[in-house]
Image 1 (cartoon, rainbow, N blue to C red):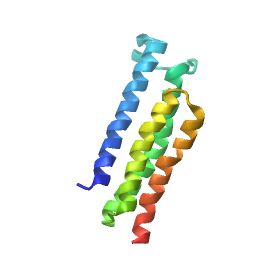
Image 2: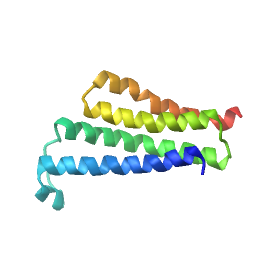
Image 3: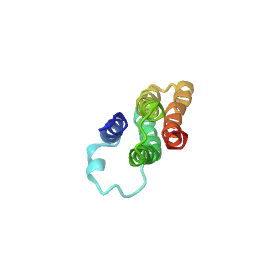
Length: 131
C-alpha cells in the first residue's frame, strides 16, 4: 500500500472521529432524548464548541470526496511521487489542524490553514499530468 492510500485510510478514520465527537457534543447540548428521537422538528443551532465542530465536520465532508478521488486517480495512474506524497500529507495533517483550530475558535488561523489541505488535493491531481 502506498503512503497516499494509507493517508486516505487515516482520513476515513479521521472522518469517523469527527462524526463521533460531534454526535456526543450534540447529545450533551440537546440531550440524549433528542439523540434517540427521530429528530423531526426544528431545533436551535448548536452553539459553542459543538457548533464549531459541527461546521468543521460539514467542511470535512465537503472536501473528503475530492481527496479520495485524487488519491484514487493517483493510484489508478500509478503516480507516486513527491507531489502525491506531500499532497496527501498536506490534506490529512491540514484537516487535523483545521479541526483543532476551529474547536479553539481561532478563526484567522483556521481560515489560513484551510488552504493547506486544499493545496494538497490540487498537488495530487496535478501529479499525473506533470510526470
